[in-house]
Image (tube, helix red, strand yellow):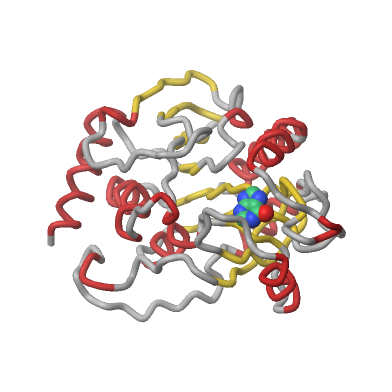
Length: 272
Ligand code: HPA
């Protein structure tokens, strides 16, 4: 399988350049790259342009680099440069880094994103650990011939977002909410009618990422914790009209707490 070759090649280059696989890999989303500054000791940086098969972002704000370091005894890899379906990437390309990291030996993934809140009870700045998702338009990486095995698999997504890891996080960071993330294709923000529909279906957040990587990780046997930062009220909620600058500004404004929660999340990975 050609895609399996891409994955294996990338896994081999990660091992060659970075050595042993870290305990936890963090996929940084919009507004999160700066939140991870200062998290790790002994940081080594790697440019994603040096990894042949790592798909590169076409959107501003997603720094294309890896940062490897330690938080206490935990070896952590911070991955900038997430790519999205709205950039024109296929599901197989979006999840290739996650699959390669799993082949390299990574077993725990923290997937971060920025999201719009469907209700004023989760105001901007709220951090929400995903309890589940509604996939409203993102591609599923298990479709078609481009799965690593080339086989179609019917994977169970109950407990996709690891309940034990999430509980360890919310026990230490009690302000972290839990909720349901609705994944939209984007890149346009939702219509107010779409947001109202998601809210009625029980969705707390709308975003454009995370779900493909979470499914690929679970299918390959890795553990997933995902956290949304509510950067805005979603379209129509309290009269909101979302825009990208607001997303970045809110992420910066609430950055300090986001950094602390990210630290808790990494440390909670070991709490089994
Ligand atoms: N909708 C979708 N994605 C987002 C939003 C939003 O309102 N805010 C940040 N990412």
